[in-house]
Amino acid sequence: MVKSNTKSGFLHKLIGDRAFYKMVLAIAVPIMIQNGITNFVNMLDNIMIGQVGTEPMSGVAIVNQLIFVYNLCLFGGVSGAGIFTAQYFGQKNDEGVRQTVRFKLWIVTIITLLTTTLFLTAGPSLIRLYLQGEGTAESVAATLHYGQQYLLIMLLGLLPFMMVQVYSSTLRECGQTILPMKAGIVAVFVNLILNYILIYGKLGAPALGVQGAAIATVISRYTEAAIVLIHTHRHKEQNPFAAGLYRTLKVPANLAKKIIVKGMPLLLNEALWAAGVAMVAQCYSVRGLNVVAAQNISNTINNVFNIVFIALGDSVAIIVGQLLGAGKMAEARDTDNKLIAFSVFCCTCMAALMFLLSPLFPMLYNTTDDVRLLARHFIMASALFMPQNAFLHASYFTLRSGGKTVVTFLFDSVFIWVVSVTIAFTLSRYTALPVLAVFILVQSGDIIKCLIGFMLVKKGVWLQNIVS
Image (cartoon, rainbow, N blue to C red; front, side, top):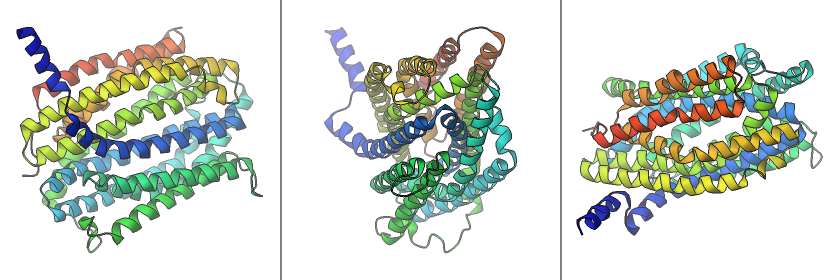
């Protein structure tokens, strides 16, 4: 009888009631739908480019890997202020929310100007870093050419993208998840339709290939920004932070200092983590252009399936952040335990489905049999590690919700450079191990991170109110 009660108590810690899951899904599902449609359409984009040929696909994939670093720098930049936004919203402090938005505007503008300068001056050199492996001189030159074409046009889309990040993150932190979802859905369908027209030259348009893909993406980003910004400012009663937002761009010095202290580790973390991911990908690329193409195919479907744990991680940040801001520490811990368990369970189911689909997806690409087979194996391996990644993602957002940004910096970006990059660099350059084995060993290194995350979350170092 004692054992049964113990088991029941353990399950009670990890499994919520119907009301709990209804509350979680109300926040997570709109994020899942937005990210899901975005990643699904990105997958269709990728397949369309893949139909043009291996070199165009690889050139676009390399540039997207570089832009991924910028995207995560923006995410880190707004996330630092976002910790305060969620907790100010929990206090019903509209002016506090407004001031955090102004801080976000400053940080994303600085990041975007620095990124544009870097890509304009060093873009070709950055692309060449991924063209060091086996491959003919013609393939390398063609991949570089397509990559440069795509990058120059994509730079025009950085401005609307940064504005969407500021507004959408704020709306989500204030519990408004529907508008970003709707805008994202419209944008991805605009992108999809224009891709079909501009890549292949339909409806009388010229066939522009990778340039058409870039133009379609840029137009879709301006569409998304217009929807989010106009709707937010037209409905100030729902979004009180928008009232008088641009009356001044000054941020109180004491708040700016607090955000910088808490947020700078987040910004550095996202920048260094994204750079670490790009570096690991570069390590795989030294094994040949086939690896670049196969990784692109694998990552594309992986992104579609990852939407579940990404949305649930965002839910941790929002739900737990608001509970901490309201001073409900016991409820925050209990809610967090259930959210982590729910995320791991959902992603185990998604991983099984992804594993089953692994032979089919690479067949959609106009590439060689060698690339298709390697892509299939990458997809299978990624599926096996998805539950592990779900736990890590939820643990990261748990620590971040309580303002433990220095801890998350060590947990995330320091770890990837010290462990993951070291394993990838050493094994790819100094051993004859197949690239798939290198990939699996790099992923296995995250088991150490899981143990650290488990101990930090259980210890409760994140249980603190940072705005009272």
